[in-house]
Amino acid sequence: MGRVIAVVNQKGGVGKTTTVINLGAALAERQQRTLLIDLDPQAALSNSFGLQPDTLEHTIYNVLTGSDFPLAAVIHPVRPFLDLVPANIDLAAAEAELVSALGREYLLRDALEDIRQQYAFVLIDCGPNLGLLTINALTAADEVLIPIICEFLAMRAMGMLIQTISRVKKRLNPQLRVLGILGTMYDPRTIHTREVLDELRSFLGEKVFDIVIRKSIRFAEAPAAHQPILEYASSHPGAQAYRDLAEVIIHGEEKHR
Ligand SMILES: Nc1ncnc2c1ncn2[C@@H]1O[C@H](COP(=O)(O)OP(=O)(O)OP(=O)(O)O)[C@@H](O)[C@H]1O
Ligand SMILES: [Mg+2]
Image (cartoon, rainbow, N blue to C red; front, top):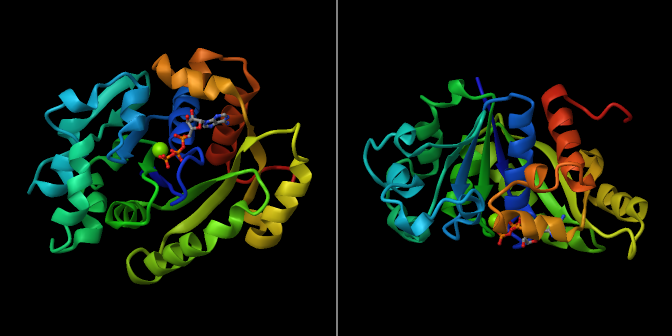
């Protein structure tokens, strides 16, 4: 049964989509069959693999809002071992359309039921909010991965997120657990990793990964080339960091803790 991981942070631009792309590519490189789900109407994930969201007739929107529209019908193979379920701007209407739907928090979980056993991992890219789509991701997930920018006071926005996760856990998905908090866009010239990680840990505890993702222009260039950084700059430290993260997620805890 595939592990379903929601990549969530209501703060925008923290590296959620970048993490889904590159962790997904790293898992696929390890021959772990992986499904990426774009749950953001901005469709950055879909764009990054060269799909043209506005030309797609069917997307995750149809799965969530149509009765009995199977997820299998909107799966696009994008690389060996890597498939993608795209979104487009239609999804922006879903929040409002689903407000009165019966079991509205369980729509994604139900849609995944028949599909997840075909994958080792399912990664869900959430938009920058804690609305119904993100609640669907948290309800469908086994684990939450939280990217957070490596800067002082970055954790101030985390209170609401942690509260939402514990509410979902209590009311909708008791199995949900935090897989880890991933420091992103780390710039060694401006701050010392240790200090930031210590500060993150003092607020957020041991769930903070030792692996951090450095700031690099390559991360912004790769999506324009419709490639994960693992292909665009395969031996770049940023690519290696996502490979290390994949390794830790496949095999469990970081060894040196
Ligand atoms: N480690 C990094 N170094 C430099 N730039 C990065 C890094 N990670 C991501 N970026 C860039 O920062 C921008 C925001 O990243 P990304 O889109 O992954 O964030 P997000 O959390 O998904 O944003 P949103 O909340 O808007 O969906 C993108 O242009 C991306 O290419
Ligand atoms: Mg994003």
